Amino acid sequence: MLSIDASEGFVDHARSHIPDPRASFEVGDAQKLPVEAGRFDAAVAALVLNFVPEPGRAVAGMARAVKPGGTVAAYVWDYAGRMELMRHFWDAAVELNPAAAELDEGRRFPLCQPAPLEALFVQAGLRAVEVRPLDVATPFRDFDDYWTPFLGGQGPAPGYAMSLNEADRSRLRERIRAALPRRPDGAIALSARAWAVRGFAA
Image 1: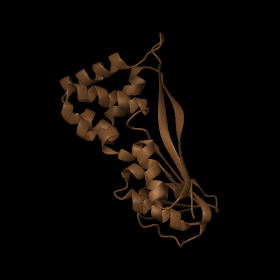
Image 2: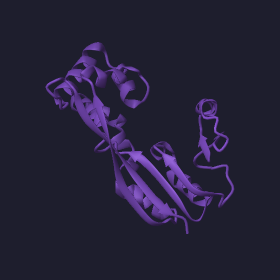
Image 3: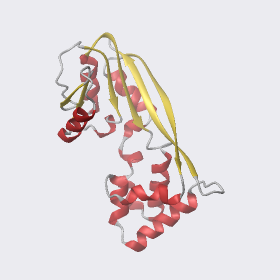
Image 4: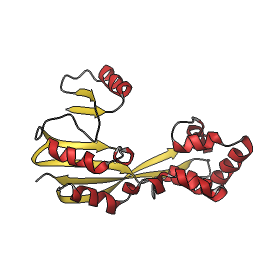
């Protein structure tokens, strides 16, 4: 198994935590995979295609890397729909400030929906392409458990939250609190959906 990531730090972390000799890790570009053609039985991109400037090149490279009949697959978060923890955040943020829509991953990433994801794989020459949802329960103990990660400042949503002054951040927090479905004990049960796509090399 070969895993490739653009971040040298991530690759070093993986190498130090996974000593299995069957697994190897290299720094590389998803749009220019540093592997010979027809080497693998399968190639998978995990939650990455939304962040690749030219995802068509990445999928074409994955198709090149597998043997004839090999599997090419990927999955991406459904930012536009059932990635509920993010949808509640951005829906509230845009209600309070329409300019926040420019940062909303659901609008910025067209591949987070089934039709463009399927088209991407078909355009790469893959056959028998299919897209399916993967739903994962994302329970939160209470509202603070939900809200605290948005105070870390890493990523579009936390970055936006921390760019606000305290009064505006408080308004955003309370708007989200009012919209979230809560149980009598304060727990919040949300769902996170990813769209998974699979095709086979010719």
